Image 1 (cartoon, rainbow, N blue to C red):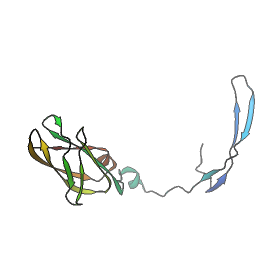
Image 2 (tube, one colour):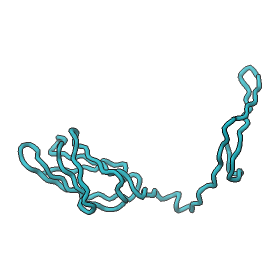
Image 3 (cartoon, rainbow, N blue to C red):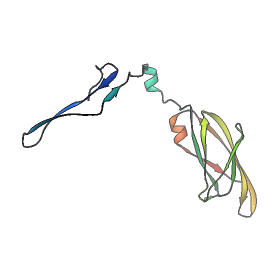
Image 4 (tube, rainbow, N blue to C red):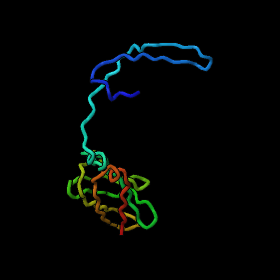
Length: 136
């Protein structure tokens, strides 16, 4: 439904339809439709993938080709920690855009192991990635 000419406000929609046989019907929706003002953007805004102000940082801890579970993962700059699950997956909620060092430490294959990864969260695609950390 084209709405570019509508001013912000509340409207009731009237729908007219013709079926395959040629019978016509008209219905007015009982629930109002709210039209809001369009956000103002510049051409530059439309072309740039904007980073969300905050998002979820996801990753996986591996030792060799195997997932490492029970590994403590810390975002050094934020002093936030979590633990990898049985598939080696970890996640942090509500992380602001920025560049971070992920530190991983815990037991794998009978020894205490550690690893580190640098992540940069600047775009929506960055927040959508699963960031790997390799244990040594």
